Length: 348
Image (cartoon, rainbow, N blue to C red; front, top):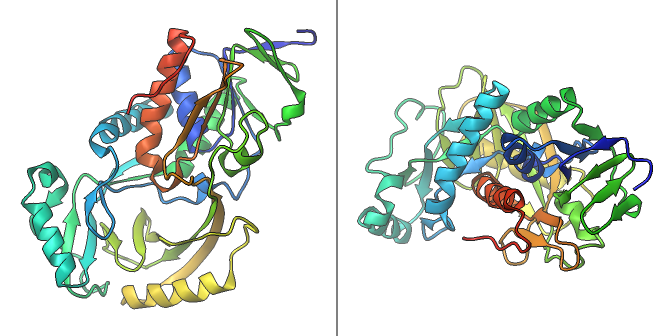
């Protein structure tokens, strides 16, 4: 290729959670990585709470493959903290309401199941902050739940790569991409592999047509509760997640609308009412945020290798469980790239 000035092992397109996890795995194995990202404020990773919830849904079942994903997630985030000198992994139990007798019976059956023992606290406890919240009915408490500070992670990793000449703030144009048998060319850069981690914009990637998206818009509110003692995540009609310094993330719903990314007035009214129902003490709305989520029709992540170009990959669709699923997939894909095997198949 002519005009090449900078040579890398791998190019990653997209600096959200998927792209940054992929970059971390590769640089941890001595790879020279170029991360290309346009730095969008509406990135779903920047808006997400980063919750790892091992027991989900109205029937209180274990999250898909959580026994496989959770150990890798904790290991990865601890290694990220060490590399970047930051703190992003916070273990915080989840307290959720049991709204009726059916829910109570369902939860009691889970408590008797030895497969759930590690994730269930025998008796829920909100004594430290019961005067601040209004949760009706009986309560359940989930252990081994975590919050990942995704924004600190992606910001710190991009800065780390930038200092090493491995970050390009740029809107990627697939028309400028050159693919040869064993080399990728883009602008003045070349690499052996390229991994697309573009979030919802991946729906328009011509190299991977019809990937299987069912895009949704997630909306979140950041509130301030002065001198709050709420130390656990709370799941009622909405999710209330402690962010530290009296700040809390509030969210939990989404609309099946992809655009625009602006906040809907309907969302603001509904959420303010829901927060007022849950939080009994004065609070202040600090910020309301919105982003398009790269959710998929199957509710499963999209991890693909191009049929014609085995050094072109697609890692996307982490959706609402990206904090727990992402580290495992990134590790699996990185190990494949390092092995230089021709075909890739992820092992669930």
